[in-house]
Amino acid sequence: MQLVSDKILKTQASSSWIRRMFEAGIEMKKQYGADNVYDFSLGSPDLRPPATVIETLRSMADAVDVPAGLGYMPNAGYPAAREALAKWASHEQGVPIPAGNIVITVGAAGGLNCLFKATLEPGDEVVCPAPYFVEYGSYCGNFGGLLKAVPSAPGTFKLNLDGIEAAITDRTRILLINSPNNPAGVVYTRGELDALAEILRRKNQSRTRPIILVSDEPYRFLAFDGKVVPSILPCYEYSVVCSSFSKNLGLAGERVGYLAVNPAMGDDEAAQLTAGLILTNRTIGYVNAPCIGQKLIIGAVERMDETLAAQSAQLAVYEERRRVMASILDEAGIEYQMPAGTFYFFPKAPHGMDDVAFVRKLAAERILAVPGSGFGYAGYFRIAVCVGKDIIERSRGGFVAAAK
Ligand code: PLP
Image (cartoon, rainbow, N blue to C red; front, side, top):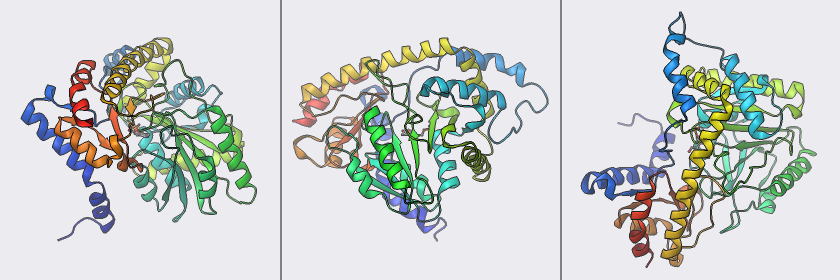
């Protein structure tokens, strides 16, 4: 008897490769021992949270031991947390963002779901460059939206601006970008963002509903070689930043993120959109982001300099892992573009091989990676360097053998 809906059955079938991959990983670790499996499949930070977060957590027990100390709060989050996040987001984006324009969400994933629910009519389209984060399609589909992917330039993953312009129709509600990009590791330039904004403004002239530019930025701090990720807020008024602390501070399980609505869209528009986001945060059933996580963020922002120093230390670890993985891919003769940000590599499957077939070859060497097809970009595969440098180094022989 079928208990789940047809839609869920279909999604399960189309994403069964993810389940199979994880199951294969677990099996392999049981068989060979965890240290002998090179698991590059998960984008889950393995580093310790910053000391500012841990110290806040240690000091929290007494502070919450009061009536309703862990109770409900306003749906947008604690006012003090919105203030703290406005400070953090203004620092990151390089433009002032008022606390009233911040909605605290259950991670970036929760933020995107609130945003889609608040803005999409059934049949509306969300245009997005490929490759893209595997869950985007489901998030749009949750609210009757359709994800329309536009392949970025092969190898460099620069935005295909002509393709994006051609993909925009009367049904386009949102243009969704993610920079630094999962899985490509590319950081879009200020020039690309300005050109994108230009396209949207041109398209808006003949529309009653402006297209909303959404920048999903959970990897913003992970930009290498001193690169600063350009902000979309100064480029385009109808824009929203979605971010979280999952990768930025390594707090993926604590589920705290935020949406920052661009004040430049106008006071009435920003107030309407923010109110919509607060409402959807409630009606989807999130109600509010976790209260412990919000308090951790307040603590981290109160000691901003120390938190930023901890972030830099984490960045240095990822930078070193990136160096080692690049040297392995070079030795194996596998083509790749050096990621400008994130902890991912998105190399080309060698010899024009099918990406799924190559990922199987890697698995035979006990190396776990994810086929590019899952990110809407076949012929490539993703490696996440969220494991220690020694494990990365020990995978060298396997990469060389698989690529032969
Ligand atoms: N957006 C992108 C591009 C991601 O890679 C992820 C997680 O991997 C998310 C959103 C969701 O992040 P969070 O854990 O903050 O919900």
